[in-house]
Length: 182
Length: 64
Image 1 (tube, each protein chain N blue to C red):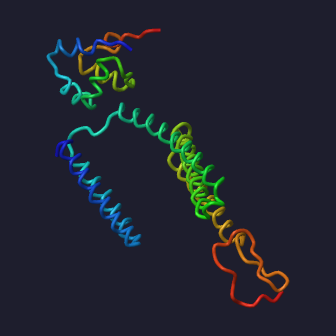
Image 2 (cartoon, helix red, strand yellow):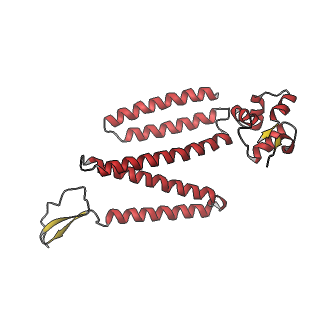
């Protein structure tokens, strides 16, 4: 398979994937897009292996790195400006706050991911693979523990105080219908 | 960084496509290299020099 043929097939797969995802999301189906993405990635990997020509070389990786850094910077600044605008105007529409918070967390996650990968390539790539897996495992456990603490700590919950259900934090569910006896 | 890749390549009657294939890079990379718009890695510089039957010192002009 030539590079040109691979690119044409890749374009067709991307178009089909976009149509499938669009239809599935419109019908509120989550499983189909995930499966479609998985199948598309697998198909592209198989086809890439069959292409004889060189897909990318060191110059492409260098250009890719520069493009990725610039894209991250542009996205972060854009998201922060939009987030501040939406958060400042949250009184106009209640959904603005949710969108602003989602944007803020997205930027934070992107920055964290970039920092971790950057440190991996700048320092950890010299370490033995076993040590790297241990460090990654430790980081995952810490993240899961923090997420678990946040989820199960009752931070956003309804508390029973003086015979009444009192909102604690911002629970996204209504007060319990059971009687409060405290 | 200036270089003499084009001269050495033409001496060997080699096309950019052939050099790219032998150096394991895309033809566009050879174009950028010849125009001095891309500084190759040490590995690629060595491979190109070896393919063109010369040395890195003769192929690339290092400027302070």
